[in-house]
Amino acid sequence: MTARALMGLVRKPGIVTADKLHYRDTDLLKLQPRQWNEVRGAKIAMVLQDPRYALNPVRSIGKQIEESLVLHNALTRADRHERVLNSLAAVGLPESLYHSYPGQLSGGMGQRAMLAIALVNDPQLLIADEPTSALDARLRNQILDLIVEQTTRRNMGLLLISHDLPLVAERCDRVLVMYQGKLVDQGIAANLPLATHPYTRTLWACRPNASTYGQDLPVLDRSIDFTRSEHGAD
Image 1 (cartoon, rainbow, N blue to C red):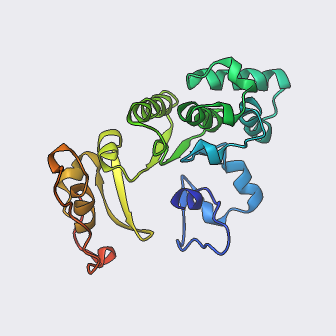
Image 2: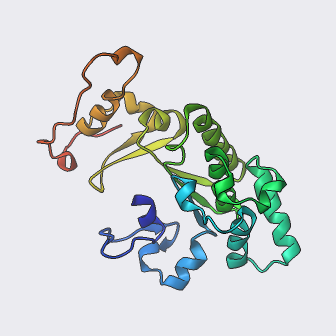
Image 3: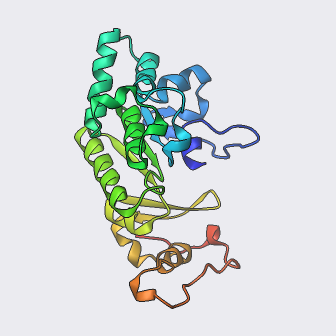
């Protein structure tokens, strides 16, 4: 839901309660639908959680990548085709997948295809919403490495949304911690193990690992109003 709100995709009866949402010099909450179409997919792009539900099952991968180019660029058909093939190559997919359909791809390939769609217009910001939650550990690291590589190479901002705190601590520069839709903590991502905010501290402590085998993990004390806590990260 956070990612959808940032992309202007919250449908009724859902509402955005923020007063403003600034991206560079633009308050996104004041954009009209036509203005949003100029931002979404061109300046800000998003990779969703599960390609099985995010990709159109009746359109080929190549056509889905090309669709974004048609919406945001005045290119010839030949130029669009070349850009699509370049986008596939950038995420490690062969040209032959241009004519493939989502149902023919593995989970990892589907996630790469979604990344190819997001990157084809060279956006300024990439929002990755739980991009590896549907993948096993090996594929998770591959996709994360690919996302970091591509955003770094393109000098692109990356907003990673995740419940995996060790992943955030390892891969991110800064972290914002949200509870019930509100920001409750923020700081340097590498300092997550040292968090003092009770919500962040409990989230970090309740991670199962080899050392906690057979032990009860800590749980959140719901009597605490985490949104009013005065504790915070450095």
